[in-house]
Image (cartoon, rainbow, N blue to C red):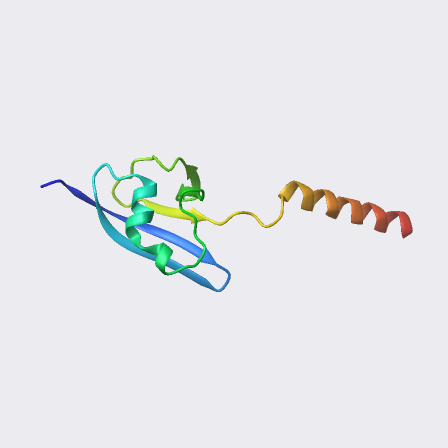
Amino acid sequence: MSETIHVEVAYALEGKQMILALDVAEGTTALAAAEQSGITEKFEGIDLENAKLGIFSKVVAPTQVLHEGDRVEIYRPLIADPKEVRKARAARAKEKRAKG
């Protein structure tokens, strides 16, 4: 019988978050744990094949082998590019200073 480890899979939307605890076989990858968790049945639109995954806020490859106690986090795609948001904010501030 293979050894198992305890891990968690987490996903969050605004107003709804979920952390699912599960036991998986040693050698299980981050993607495999996310698939085994059943989280896609609880949230519509999760594309595990293309989602970025992380372990405790650090992005990892889907093939990352998990260790006892790891928490796999499924990250949502960004709605806006942070660089573009900063540029727009700086342009508005510059415009405001020019008027003021």
